[in-house]
Length: 323
Length: 254
Image (cartoon, rainbow over all chains, first blue to last red; front, top):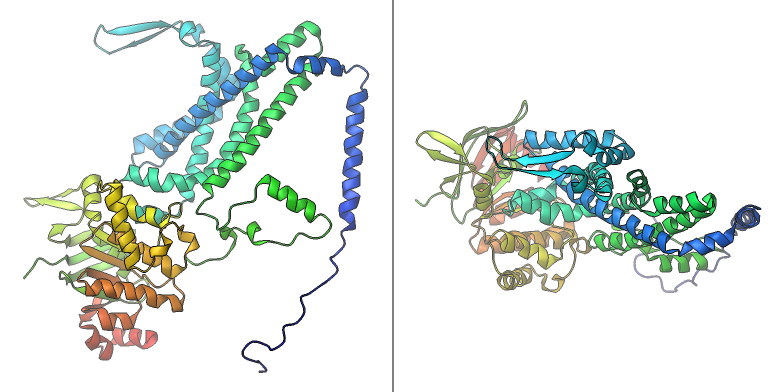
């Protein structure tokens, strides 16, 4: 053994090394730019594509109304999906066999049939049930409603999208719940908390970290899936642009208009999802993940050389730790 | 003689076909500190978890402060207690886990006031006041707004003890409270427990810290294979174990 104890007397000079060169980064950057330029060129010079029409209709009142309806459909269907999904997930994990079977059956049924079919079903339900009667059995008290008035087009789409979404959300929430360490439940129970309290105060808030990313994914997916509501003649973005192109035959131009709006909306949602995740990461990571701006700055700064792994890139989950 | 704080008579517990507890008889008097030692798999943690009904016992009788755990007896029939009652009884027993199990999404102080407010219905002012006092007592007054993962293991375990104390329990259960800690952090947790024992808290401690058992413990129980092999005064057992299995076990850990 040859070890010197204590601090060395002379501190050596800080390391100054020439960074590793990355020529392939430049090659790929040029290649990607060339391909992008080609794509833009093809679209810009397509002989029968009238970009003027795209410009005219981008902020057309009908299109804007369609955007609003699409957002409404997405928001309401997701709200139903999340609320019902949490309920179904908790039911699924219940000790009561009747309750958990009901949840299992619901998920099996609504996940097993296409959304388009479900929307179509609700839209046409009046064909088999022209009137809906609700009453108390063995009494004369009852109430009758006309189905077509009770379930207008918009509601048919909402039911189709929301009830289907609930089945998917239930599985996402369930995955989140079982990802929370069992010790958490035990500690809460040992403090005398009741089952609902343990779920609401201890398990669900921690499950959120696992639930949020796929839920953001589902919301973005819903924004696009809501276009299926056109089958129920709901005036959302896809239906509206189709109505317009039925008249002027500028099919591709209007599809581009719709796509621009879909892309814009999903971009905004992606942004919102990031900050939501950041919020629920509190307490889980020693340092919160960098915001897009911070990331961009770092990426630009380190493009020439290899970005060093900074403390901020490593969350506590990546580190081995006791407990 | 006063009602024993914990009384176990022929307590049995199985997980499937595996019989983990095969007849445990013991009594813990009020203000007594009992340490339970034994090899892993001897059933000592399971027994501890039976005391606050985290596990159900299969046979025998287990009572805390004169009341059966998880059941109530009318005539010669046993009735299962409803959840609400089980929760109320658990709220009177503090428990500290090997892996701390602090709520990571809440600050230290929030961990301490959660149960007093939700379970006991205490006002926030009262709960916060006691929470701060307890954090001060375990030497963490400056960590009020810190999240658990930003604390060292020893600090986390001290917060966990304070969280249990915030419910003002009449009995404290410790399930290997120092086993997950780096050796240099064990002392600070044992210090807090020593203080607690000094103040007259009734404690059942499953541990591997023989020094603590000798100094602080009023009684020592050695368990193996789901039964109590030997029990008595810690000094006597640690110095002169009577049973062969106790001798072998102590020879390996001391």
